[in-house]
Amino acid sequence: MSLFAEYEKQQKWRGWENYLKFIPLSQKDTVIDLGCSVGDVSRAFSLRVNNVIGIDINKEFIEFCDSRRNCNEAFVLSDFQSADYLSFGDISGIWGSFSLSYLSNPLDYLKVLNSVMNDEGWVALLDVSCFISGNLARDSKYYDRVKRFELESYRFGLYDFDFGSKMQGLLKDAGFEVVYFDNDVTDPELNFSGSAASEIIEGWSARLNRMNKLSLFLGEEYPDFCDELLSNLGSNTHEKQGNVRFVVAKKSSKPLN
Image (cartoon, rainbow, N blue to C red; front, side):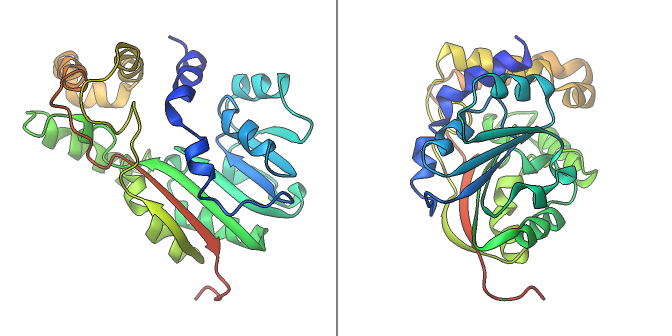
């Protein structure tokens, strides 16, 4: 399964409309979609606000989004930190789903976003917590090692598998005021209880096939680990563990220290 096909398939599991109702949207907003992927969230925003600008580093994603964009959508091929935000006009909203966890210094980046937004600006972030370890059985022999891998990935600035648990604190430190949060969002692929559907197991299998760093970390045991994780996802005893979190914050009137 290609990365594009994998991401496109995931869209129907996200339930984007459920998140938008908690965001203080205005019809005059210009919204930035960080890591727009195949553009489904950008499209949803475009039906509600004045302008939407999607940013992604993946050329295939940007070309696809451009090919079907609405008249009030624009898409930019760039990494987040190199984008020219001042050229986007009066920014009033920032959406980031499963994207800021790739940054080695998200706090400094959030401070930059705060500085380029208007005074009524808002940020909405959706991300994972205990991404891989949280979907293992609680008594798994791999649990401690996978937790160690997740922690080392964060310490080396590669990817934060627990970014969701840090979002509220980071937003407050970056000069935002949290107005809504949900620390246990139900998601049929990433945070659910009971047995997953076969297409979700297939999606997880595709994800595990491209996790080269975890494969190297576990070595020859990686195939067995994958089998155990997929088996747990398909088990009736699988339990959600707060692996998906959502937070909405508004720009604070208080100056940063």
